[in-house]
Length: 239
Image (tube, rainbow, N blue to C red; front, top):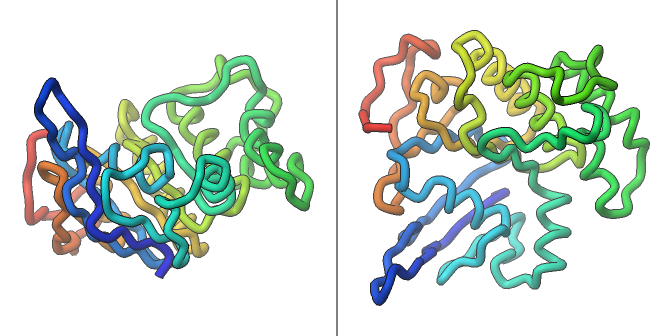
């Protein structure tokens, strides 16, 4: 199993009161999975991603990646794990405006010593996401959808086993959303597991599993059987 969380809890304090943002989550993700997590704002979805990415420490429970409990690692080892095992597409725009598109994509490659040519690999990824002609462009020249593709290419530069995406199609039009989701489907078919948080129910049909998060707990749902955009969803929530 690529990823397993066991009894995962993350508590925060508000005044004298503690409340669980993530409450006893058990989750298993294999290398073949494309998992969508949906739920209301504030239900704990982004907190769960940040825990799995090693950006937050859990209050209790464990996070196993290929059998290694990353929740017990120190900050340096967590950073090594994150850079080698996980690609992360954060919510909103995270592209650095003072770097070219190419430099943004290859930046994570230089964080730790590794073999290969960063430029060659970054150009190949930009070609895969349809931005080969914009490698030397400034991010200021790109549309919202193009910037999101840069973030995805950057997340893939170190060949992660798991790609995590937090609201990757937020603020995008319907056509760009479909293009991004088709890209994710190709990434999944090429052997990278995907864990995606989304408010947009029309996107969940692209994966093979759907989970809902409510008050910090996860529930697996039946995947819609119809094509994306026309699915009859077995659940509803207020975004």
